[in-house]
Length: 268
Image (cartoon, rainbow, N blue to C red; front, side, top):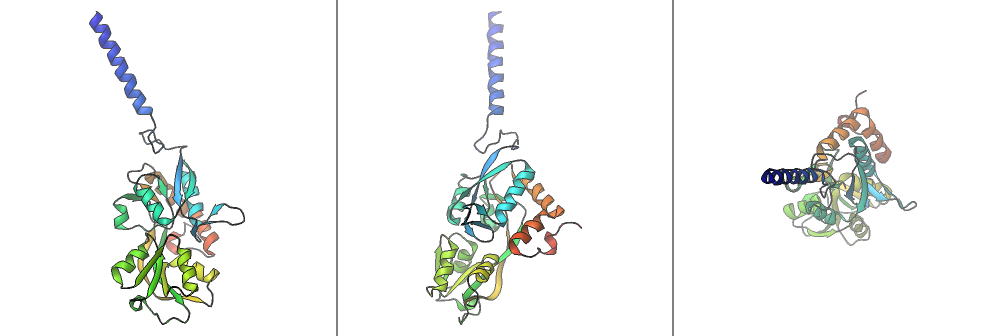
């Protein structure tokens, strides 16, 4: 009788332990059963990549296409987000090291990055392009060998320059530093993402800077997630619904001043 009692006590203890393990939250905020609803996740982002993410100097608030996009995705997927800004190189390292669950910063989906990160479906089609002074003799990427060409640390444009040219590559934590150095004559050109280059020329470089050559290395931006994240499926469904009902197009037009391409327009 005594042995049966001890056995029952042991079994109850094991069952209670298993139950406790089943409800304990993981480091990413989930409970191990796919329950991410109502949880708050830190989004790693940049603060100097207009019009995707930037600090409003008047309000001190983070704004931009990416910011509005991930807020709406999170709302529809049932989780909440808070933001932490950093340079792009630090963002990649933090994401790959598992420090952050989500990252958004005009991040191109590449095979190399997919080895250590998960990505959402694409939400923006981009590429990289050369920006030079208006009186420059550089006409394409073929003319940059031996020239000082700026880029951003950790970006696909920095990688492209290293693999495909003999340029003197000068990469900076913030791309705006490269732009300013180009405008001040310290660089011969800058290679970077098309929308950001075009935005900078329109806002700061009219009559002084221009794009030259073709758009290189067509790329798609995606929301990055920690490898194996439980947020990917729900976030993709949220993003798909935003495209379908026209919310994506509204956010796009807010920041780019025009409607997106047909593939991003919702059903009439």
